[in-house]
Length: 178
Image (cartoon, rainbow, N blue to C red; front, top):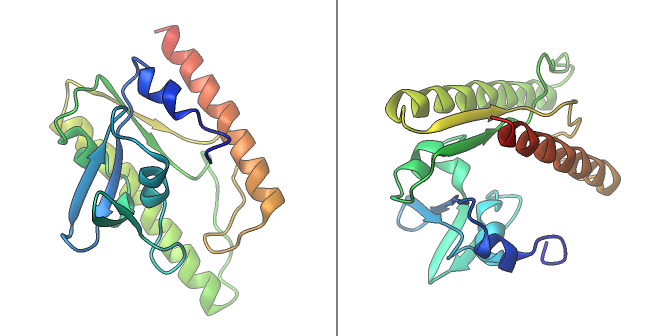
């Protein structure tokens, strides 16, 4: 991550970045912005308990912000960091369908994925209702990501990251035309 992300550029950017992580001991959220974001904060925000270990940041044990809400956009907006636009990322392309459940594992994965998708959309709708002053954008990938939640294939992950980068650049391009 430190090779791919220029944190000095993020810190200097006029575009506000807010990252939310969950405090596992305090059972609350912690929000970080351009001035306070570090590689440890990003690792903590992606630390899914049971898969990736929590990360100590400023003496607090932090993990995925999605533990508090599938899309912790309200938590980010309530952090007191002024923003005009919030991006809510969805991991599923428009119209993407699940797999037929052929085993208990697949059935549980599909149930989990379905619940996540609907909770993410609901969180974005709630953020729009509570914060009409903020443009809340729900961004979906241009093509299915095709990764299972607990399967880590380096080549598929790299391809998904590259598609995500292209989708992100396309999103920024659309914003600059608004």
